[in-house]
Image 1 (tube, rainbow, N blue to C red):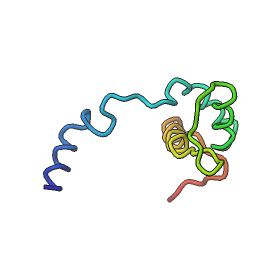
Image 2: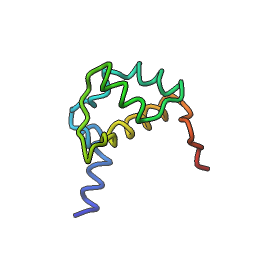
Image 3: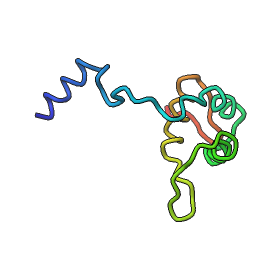
Image 4: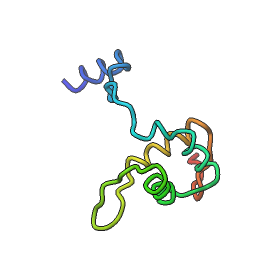
Length: 91
């Protein structure tokens, strides 16, 4: 069954994981790209989004949960060839 499911996913990539739902950070793509190029950390970008753009992050034990933002920024950096601060390319 697992193999059948994997074959179906390969045959139908447009019906894959996203299912038509856009990412909540897509609206701020240009601003996030500039902040990444300037070398800001995920925490600083999350702070910017909360204070300036009024994007709410769920709180867990008093800290922002920024996993979704970090994943989005990672993909954005990969797409635009931006070297993230403190990161080195794996060989």
